[in-house]
Structures are given as structure tokens and as C-alpha cells.
Image (cartoon, rainbow, N blue to C red):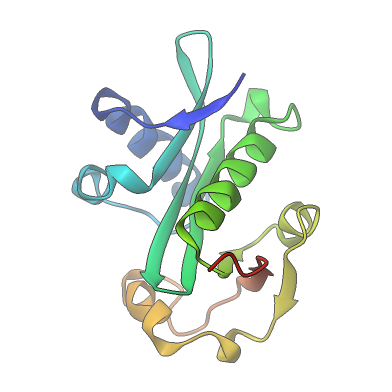
Length: 154
């Protein structure tokens, strides 16, 4: 298995995978159009020809990006696909010179394994909360905010 950039024909599978977990209340639901519009953000992991995991690195500003839409099919969890995706996102952030990566999650322990650490949500810039208006839990967010700081590469 390896993480690679998503292809256009991956989008329906990514949409189905993310919204499967969204229906369970584990992540924010996303429209099919959002995945097409942001395909350059997306990474996938395949097991043979089957897409088994996805994640995105979404850039907010020159020094800030979010790891989002991290989803792994249940049968493949705890087999390294998620780790491959997080590493790919962090490597891309580093290659772009982005120093701070954040995520909002219900599984902080997963992200802490990679060096993310918990912060108060209020420490994040207001700009990152634009999508929250679409969340069924807004304004009572119960996700955990974490950040990761890369060494300056500028």
C-alpha cells in the first residue's frame, strides 16, 4: 500500500467513504461537488484496485493547512493506511513551506501518534470555522482541535 494523489475517477468512492462515516456522526458530511472542486487536496490509499482510505490537505493561508476527511474503510483500519495518508499530508505541507497543520477530530489519539498536540479550539484562526456552519452539531462542537508544527523550511 502507498498514499498517492487522488484521480478524478476516485471521487465517487471518496464521497461514499467520507459520508459513510459522516452518517455515523464521526465526521462532517461533504458534497460530491466539494471533492471535485478540491481534488488537488486529496490523497488515497488503494488495496490493489480498491480505494480503502482517503485524506486531504486543505490550505488556508501561507502558514496554515488542515488535514481533513481522513477515512479508512473499517476492514482496513489499524493496518497502516491512515498513517500513510497523514505522512503524505505532512510531507506535502513541508514541501509547500506550510508550518502549521491542524485537524478537528473525534480521534485525537490517532493524530497524537504523529506529533499533533491538542489545543483549545479558540486558538485556531476564525477563518477555519467557515465550514462549521454546515455542521449539524454547530455551535456545540465536540471535536478536538490538534496542531502540528513543521520546522521552518523557508
